[in-house]
Length: 157
Image (cartoon, rainbow, N blue to C red; front, side):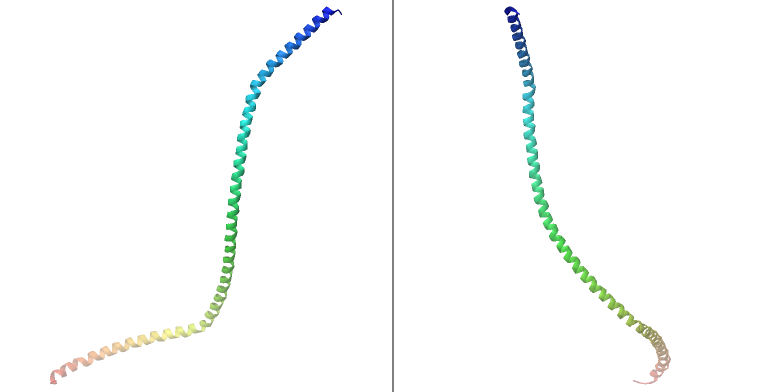
C-alpha cells in the first residue's frame, strides 16, 4: 500500500471517529435531557420518602409511649379488679355459711309451724266466741232496756 492510500484510510478513519464522536455527543445530550430531570425527581421523591419514614417513626414513638402508659393503667386496674374478685369470693363464701345457717334455723322452726297453726285456730275460735258474746250481750241489753224504761217512768229520780 502506498502512502496516499494510507492517508485516505486515515482520513476515512478520522472521519468515522468524528462521526462516532458526534453521534455519541448527540445521544449523550438526549440522555442528559432524560437523566437529569429523572435524577432531580428521584431526589425529591427520596426526600419525601425520608420525611414520611421520619414522621411514621415519630408517630410510632408516640404510640408506643401512649400504649405503655395505658398498659400501666390497665395493669393497676386489673390488680384492683383481682383484689375485688378476691373480696367478692370471700363475701360469697360468708353468704354461703349464712345461708347454711338459715337453712338449719328453718328446719328448727318446722316443728313450731304446727304449734303456730294450732294457735291460729285457737285465735279464730276465740274471735268467734267473742263475737257470740257480743251478740248475746246486745240481746240482753235489748231485753233489759225495755222493761227498765217502763220502770224508770214510775221511779221519781
